[in-house]
Length: 292
Image (cartoon, rainbow, N blue to C red; front, side, top):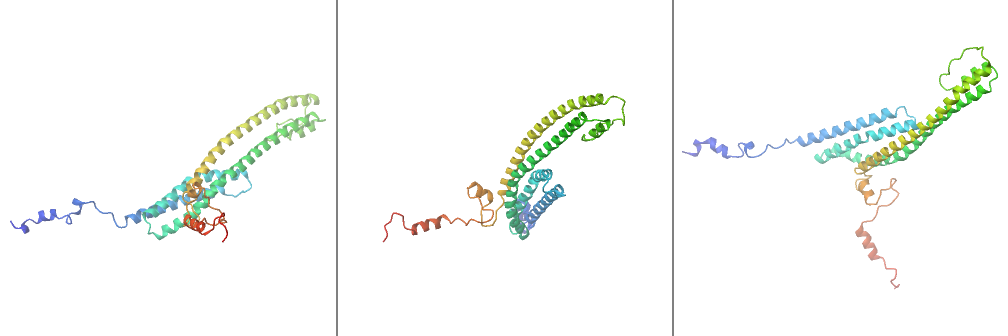
């Protein structure tokens, strides 16, 4: 039988005729670009969500309010991982498609931004200390002010000369004052004694409760501060692993781990390479060499 009589067997033996039988189907030419583009837009989505959350927490702006500072700091720490995942996705997109110019420009912008964001998270630690201490002081001042109002009311009642003076003294109480009749037939001394006996134990209980609440606030703040400090340090190191001021420099994390922290304002000159430093030492005469 001639070879032309069995075309099917010839085609089966030809690997180019049936590519699936001898090898895997190659990926589409634009598959890498599609994956990189998806990662790029996923990163953009996370960045937008991060910014919207920060803007919502910071509006309206009250820079001198420690409660506002605390809320914004907590939101930055809670939303930091979202921005971090977005940064990682953008770096992966750059790794998958290094020839994409739009992704390359975004990564080039991401590097210095991450450098300053890392320092921003580091600065959140003293900001947390400042806002927390001021909040504790405000709470303590409120408790002291209310306690002083109760004490002033008690003293005003004890020194009252008429029933109208008692009514005026009761208006010094914080919050809703108890309703008293416009006039009363009981002797004034009896009314004063009754009100003082009711207020004095209340003042003592209020003071004990304020002290206990102050200790609880202090303990809760220490726990929250420790958690926030750890979170701020972790976010600092993660963004420092990406951030660099200039493309020719190492990342901020590499500089920190090597003991060569980059100057934030570029005031220090770059260190000379080891080869140049060795060449300069060879050209300079030793201190003990006699002059020629």
